[in-house]
Image 1 (spheres, rainbow, N blue to C red):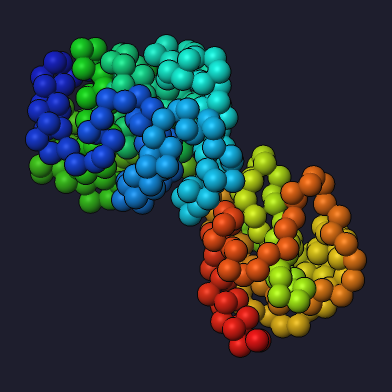
Image 2 (tube, rainbow, N blue to C red):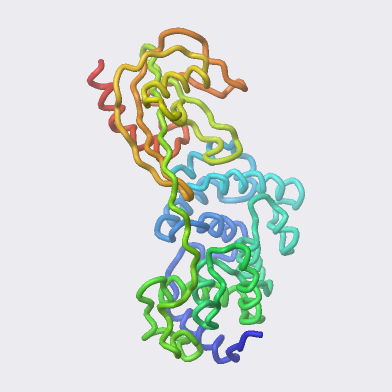
Length: 362
């Protein structure tokens, strides 16, 4: 069993948090819906990035009812640029379930809330502890780092198979009387003091309890597994022009970037040029015959587990009718209508050059 600090640890940590916590908009409300929205957005995303999205989102969807009533395209457009779009899709689905099954009230039961789409262990614990005072410990990357140094934990923080040691340790540390404040304090400690590199141990409020600090081993924790090199995929996409309109296609609602619009295209095959891949992919995907006029740009973009090098081509429609599944799987639009549709960030990088090209083409 891990050696545990006594109540003095909790007292010092909570005192530090009260005096030093950041002034964040979701800390000014006790509304469970608002807290839920913030926690979903904060997954895999930095606080500074989240704040403007959070404020815009709640301005447009101030309640579960408003979110559930919105169409997915509108939700994804507000989420555009925040990434990890499955978070928005799942929250939209969950809102509809909360409206129909829970009288538009966020469930104050951990297991029931945990059963909603997109609600994992972390979000369930965060919302239930902060909004309802449930004594459930949160474990995110910041908390894992703090726990690793407090207890010299050998479990790699990026290996899912060993993660059970962290919830156990966090649960034993948890302040049962103030679980919401304590969970936020642990996360804030990791974000502001117990940083991955150059932690501010000299001003840490709980340094006397930290085994890594006491043993001068802070730089040895947390443990991490070395990941394999991130693969790079070559992608070819085409801006297909037909008179004064261009073609956009809708990605399937599930999977990476699900529900977003994009220019048609796909991966370049071995032995194939990007130009050849563009023609082949558009023929296979849409049924259209096109002619590549020129390369517009090459875009480099990183996702969580891979990177892409995407060459964007200007293409001229030659023949055929678009053949895609569903009545709204494609649209012919004018360039000025692009802001009406949610696009992946990689596509956004091409928009300024495309606008310049179209202006010179007139």
